[in-house]
Image (cartoon, rainbow, N blue to C red):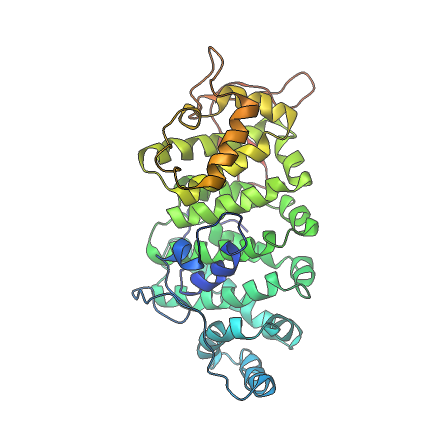
Length: 376
């Protein structure tokens, strides 16, 4: 499914698709707009930047009239000539209809129509020829899939059908053009909606796929907003016991994650972002819950997290300062003599029992086959 070196679309759907995602993050910036202020809103072109606000519906006259208006639109998704306009309308209305997801899933042909929209973009990924118009259209389709992914009744069906795998070629694109950036951002929003539910089945599914290396690549090379959402996804995986055990099971996996986090901290030392640093610190703190990872972090935690480099940036964020204090209390506020500087220099090697230890080296994130294959 991977399309190396490809790129893809971006759309307004990024905003509300991710607004519900970020609203549940502990200590998140107040309101979705603070996290997504640079993204367009549903139903607008990539060249517009309207003010963010609560979604509104043109439906009047009560719930039944709203459903009566909604059903014909859903049915029209199967008509290729009407689909583009219907995608736009439904993406605008989706927050006004809590049960839109079951209607979409159980209406004949609608999910197939949404998948057709996604697959039709693949030829535009490599070489990267995606236009803003095509990006808007496919991201409206992704926004509807995000509804399905986040709804309790349809989430397990969504996973059983392996629908998230259709999004991975979008996450694997590397073009930095705006249409591709918004395509990645909206696709991350779908995955983020899944992990936000704290469902063990979701984590188990994702760990059998390439989501960790795909997120790590975006965490290193994406925009600040994409980095933030990708880091949130990794954070939610780590907060699950199975996810933490998976990442810490081998030196290669731990090192791939910790090196990317270290490199991100090094960049933030030059250009701080509290909203991104928050999720990075939470990832480190969760890794420290594993005994072997904790020993490794004592050697390779970035010095900039041990000193006052981020003191000014975090002075008003009580939660992150608390997390950082907890982290330093278990890994130490000073690196042991001879340890690396934590910016991709020190890394883990297998201990005698095959778990994590620390040495020097560099990492390569692989997006090959074999669920989350992270190679040193």
